[in-house]
Amino acid sequence: MQTHTYTHTLENTEKKLVGFTDHAIDCCLTTTGQFLPRHIAVSYTMQEKSACRIPATVFITRKNKKICSPPLEDARYPWVKKLITHLDNLNANQIPSK
Image (cartoon, rainbow, N blue to C red; front, side):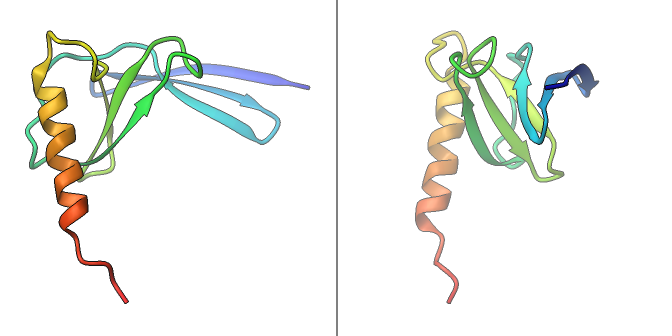
């Protein structure tokens, strides 16, 4: 099995892509504590330490960029929890399309 690893930096976001045949893992290598305005974010995912080197909250922007932010549990960044709550409320209030 051949393995390829490379690091890509884009707008203060570092990602590590590791390819094992046709499987890939996209991990944040670092996080930024810089505040992210809620009108920019459209969704998020939680990066678990068991799958990647560090835990992180990964916000997806309107321009489909990934922003690696501190994990939800990091009390130094209360805006992360507020933004997650905001996005969860937006998704809960959306009317499903038929």
